[in-house]
Image 1 (cartoon, rainbow, N blue to C red):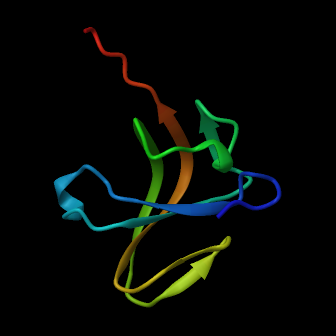
Image 2 (image 1 turned 180 degrees about the horizontal axis):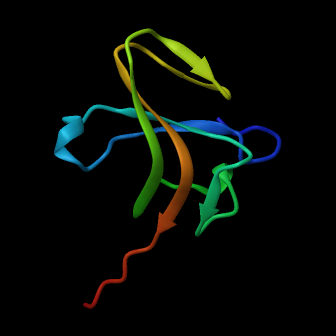
Length: 91
């Protein structure tokens, strides 16, 4: 979900880290979120790689914020930075 400013909103991702046990994580963004590699939420793609820096909270109740929602129990990340990375391959 992307707000009219293309910064405020959120998306769901599955982190690579084994600590999250392949559980989907809701990422919340705001007008204060720094985007790198893309100009905002509408340009994000699931591949090749999205890196998120922020605070992760374990939510024991379902909820919604910034147009994104989650079902408990859930990990919710308040993103400070979202970086769409590219991967160079040497073939």
